[in-house]
Image (cartoon, rainbow, N blue to C red; front, side, top):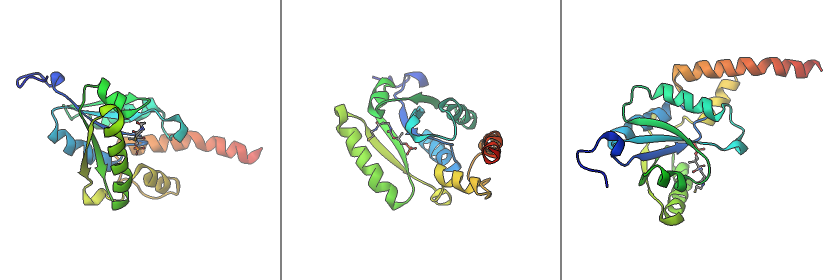
Length: 180
Ligand code: PNS
């Protein structure tokens, strides 16, 4: 049981899980607002190699740590396997999810019910996305970026730099393929 006067480390955290490939300003908005509601917030990056992410798990964690550096009660961690198992290991009772548009709700609601059913799992609290980020997702940001669009309003500057560096490092390979 957390004590009323316990240190921040002793208080039960909430877990905000996701792929964060990469973290967007929409994610950051949810993190900042959820961190105001809970004494501790763990942003948990899933290791899901089947999704073929743009950034490695370690890099996604690193970018999140960078953008959350000023948020004293936010930690960044990684997990593989079932979310409910991670949540239990972390000593948390609550999962935080961001909700953007109505279609998010159908998917997120079914995940919330399933997670709650699994091994007497945790409850899910939904945080509505701020209107300016209602249409921002990691996949849309990657698509716009890959087609040369301006994504500087949608991702933190450090993420934009990382995406530029990542695209510079893959381009030579594409050229090699063309020549062969
Ligand atoms: O950012 P994403 O890709 O929408 O995040 C999805 C995530 C990580 C929340 C979801 O894939 C997940 O919970 N993965 C862990 C495996 C798991 O527990 N699956 C059952 C969920 S109902």
